[in-house]
Length: 155
Image (cartoon, rainbow, N blue to C red):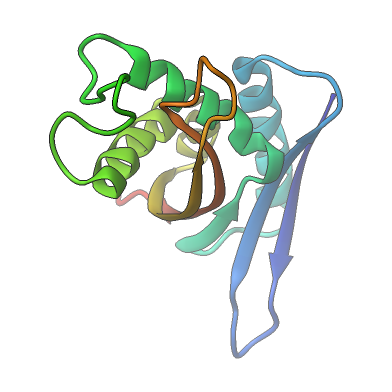
């Protein structure tokens, strides 16, 4: 398994920074991915400090977040009707974003960013498909686009 944290800095005047997190190969636990992100993010910051806010992309690292979202929506207390494949109350997109934001906040990846003084914020999702197996058909399956921003925590 390989975990990569790549940083892309646009030259001035844009001064736009993107941090991309990606995983390849055999599966690691969420905790192992979080620890690797923490270490690699620390190395990147040591070379050059990060701005107060920047975009974060997850690549294949979002798969674990999608799995955790489905696990969370299967809970009896969840605002999700498994038979109908939609929320019990509220708008589909709003409920999925709310639940996904909670999953992200509790993730080891978010913990790695917190360790370096940043919080992760889910800005939006796009092109959400339903699961493709009998077990997941009534749950969000794959999220093609997940927009995240890291913000420096105020001291």
